[in-house]
View 1 (cartoon, helix red, strand yellow):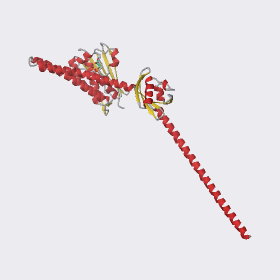
View 2 (cartoon, rainbow, N blue to C red):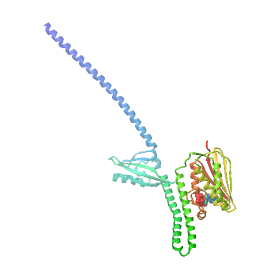
View 3 (cartoon, rainbow, N blue to C red):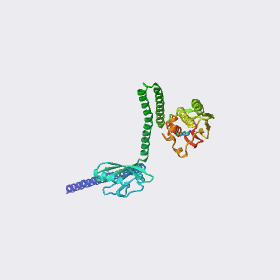
View 4 (cartoon, protein in one colour):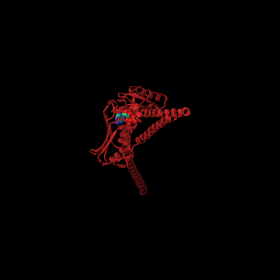
Length: 382
Ligand code: ADP
């Protein structure tokens, strides 16, 4: 009997131990499951924070982009626009059919139908602006992304470049034609009459000189468009005196009195070569557009942190309506007079580039028949 009881007690003890062991295991599992859960919770929190950060960054990028973005769904509704798009389209479009001008809608429709990217340039608004739109199919659900860029300035610059090439070609064509004609005359007529050769050789020389002036000015202009090399401290007063000596003989030939009154002025940080070019062009113009007996006065004064250069003449003057345009390339008030006196139409454009490259300005005041005064302000070296 005792043996039986002992056996039962051992069995119960074993069962108890087993239950205890299981219970411990369950607690352990539960604990590790809880720890796992907490870890997953933490990870989820981190991921959500990272996703939120990504979303904010993406929003920042999309809202500061200059390109407008419009996402159009297959049913024609607009599911997203960024602020640039709202600006380009003058409002937030709710659907494709409210996007104007019509060229943009057509680009989106064609992109959706053909599943190919479409590009369209459209003119819009008053004052007129040019928008370039790329409609790009994205994904397989008929979504189209419209990317809109304002290309008004790029088109204006392109038109300026085209005009410039056309004008330059025209300017070069004239002396080249004269040179060809003179050369041909010399070849055919000179054998019969030697005086013809001398006359036409003179014409040839004159036109070749004109051609080389245009080419030299064009080269200066293209160099200046890339900027001046501002590495020197320039004493504009002594530079003026040097240029005055050079131009003195041209003034004497033209019968114009040239007077240079240059106060000692602060130095200017810049390029002596380009500042000489500026002075030469202004004084050369003043002499060329002043009649015999007239005067040209060049002055230099120190202002408040600026050096002020003035070139004043008692010449033919410039009509008020032409004043805003004389700094444009190839703009001339009187084409024939400019040509006769050896002008290229590029001098004042060169002057403006040099002044601006030095952080300065150039302006003009003029009275027809009485004379003109050009004023250049350059920042003085600190
Ligand atoms: P150009 O080689 O024809 O002189 P510029 O660019 O130097 O070209 O000047 C542009 C135009 O401005 C000239 O053709 C001329 O009509 C006018 N102009 C420039 N300077 C003077 C001046 N001092 N007096 C009168 N007209 C001037």
